[in-house]
Image (cartoon, rainbow, N blue to C red; front, top):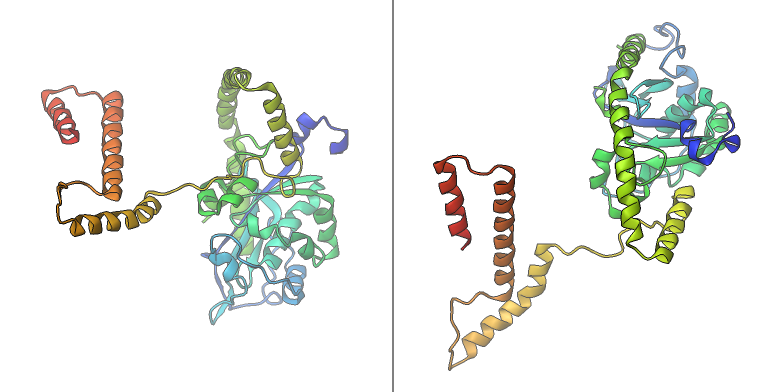
Length: 369
């Protein structure tokens, strides 16, 4: 179905989602060859067509990627080669991040590191039969992967350029991996913030841990088991349908307490960003820098030293030598506040039921005083 003919609120129904990752546990020794052992029905199931894949990955010269995020080894080690006697270093694969089903023609051997000439081929090989107009890609280094994507698409084989150029691609970082990224990447590629993804987390690809024929049989069995359990996921859907009106009512009630003009401005910013998340200003980007306790201590450290020098140089010193200096005073105050919070939380969640438990609570209170 053409998405241009679809209501904007229903487009998510036809948007394709793919999660991709590499597994370097699935190494293979160099004990055979494609000519001697070509496999049964190459590219008929989940593995890519091996000859075309190897011709592309051995011949294409890809642009050098810059590690612009948190120093991920998968980016720095893209061009590494296998150890002596190893033909393939691992496997790159794709699954549906929503249901965990393995994508046909979406699995391939990695002949070196996790380079994008391998991963791009796997992604768009899986997309080729889908004829998708909009695609969500989940990748643990999506923030780096997307930067030079347009350059790399030009280097793909002709049969893969079409799905790559035809689709509007949004990139996501799996939820569990998000905190490891810099703040800008956490908002730009967030499963929590972009619309039309529900509670998808993008982590299904991480659940995978001989080769082609055996992998094809394994992935077929995996998909079959997923199909059998799809009914269980309907329970979550029924719960979500019950909770949706409650959350919407709370949201609308909260919105009414805010300035109507400002709410409209915010709404326009969010809608503009959702339609073009990689170019429009990000309304979720953090514009203030959080200050850690260590930073506060470093800022107050000169004050402490000045105070100590003032006390030492004062001949008529009437100061109490036990007085806490600014940094130590603030640290003690924060520690005291944390102790009070923990005690109040414990009392609320698990009130004392025996004399022994009550005695422990009393001792904690005395420690705070």
